[in-house]
Image 1: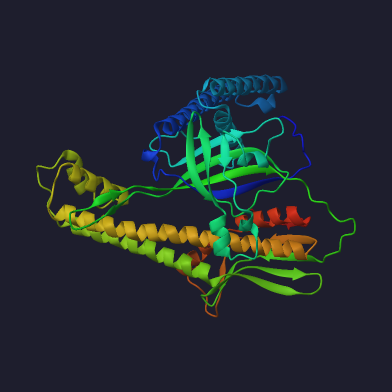
Image 2: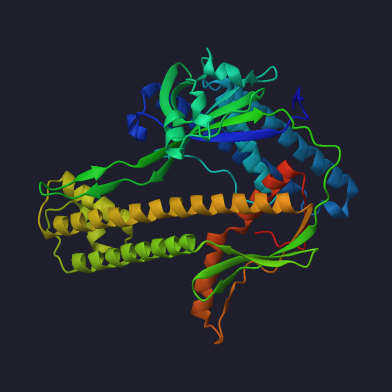
Length: 479
């Protein structure tokens, strides 16, 4: 890996939401779709290369079933496996060099693929899989070599990434938050191969002066599936919703640290999650060297939103079963195609995708009747329930991450050292007088997904890097 010119400068990623004039994948320009398909083709070719490597490795291991018993056999097996690995890496780099995508995009695909294989060999994930069907996530990258691009040039004549400058009043605290947000709104462009994508964004976080831009990435994710809207004339399908973001990786000039630093106390943080009185979810207990003890609770609004989202999901599941029961009592006419009759005959095992497929087939054939009306009613209500649930999930996750970020920053400003301990994070108990049943214990265990201890630890590490706080993990169970 090439040595950084400013290795002592910290790296930071600045993320901004982006609004494109293309709300769905199908409406993206053909040149952008072609670039994405070329990147996915490269990924699938790398997956095929990896599968051939695994096959060759299994053949070698079959020839030497017990290499530990014979040192010479073990050495021969290692040499053969090393040759297979080197051949695999050479073929992967050759495929990457032949890919028609831009240099930064194909290097991104190769790096992501190698990370996936490393995780597989470390038993931290499964093998890389092929990517087929309609894309649900796209990444476009630009890498700036020769030390990076000065951030001031982003607002100038940069072709690959350009932002219109904002008013200096957008950072003036004398203005209200709404006024600063309006003043920070700007437009820009991001080049994808030979096509320029225009977007609108808000620079809510000013770029640090004197920094250098190392990598710019435009990332799009499908946050909601397609749905259905019913009206008097019948109804129509709703496209999937996408969310876009601009990620800027910057080298920031290091801040000067005062020679005389005030000593701060040390503390221990026990990540033990408990539900109190069905309303408050404790995420940990803090004890410091001054004798102070404090319990950290998740805001009640986050817990309420999480429960409401689960209620909406339960309502959608109940609606699905109710719709399937109604369809069972309807007769399937003989004029329907075999695919439609097959779906009708397997309603007991059918889930939501199967009902969407059944509705699509019935509408393509122009069929009417009670079955179509029932499916349209289900599709309309299910879309509303699931989209509201997905919106709630994005909202409470954002609120939780904001809360974790602020709590972690406050703790790191307050203490010189934090010793983080954890009990078994798989076990979450309820502080009540009566013992809980097994079903109740399983329900409480789902709160761990809401609390996300891994996310809280990540916020602690990020805050510690800014405040020069030492984070020590003591017998921490990995989440």
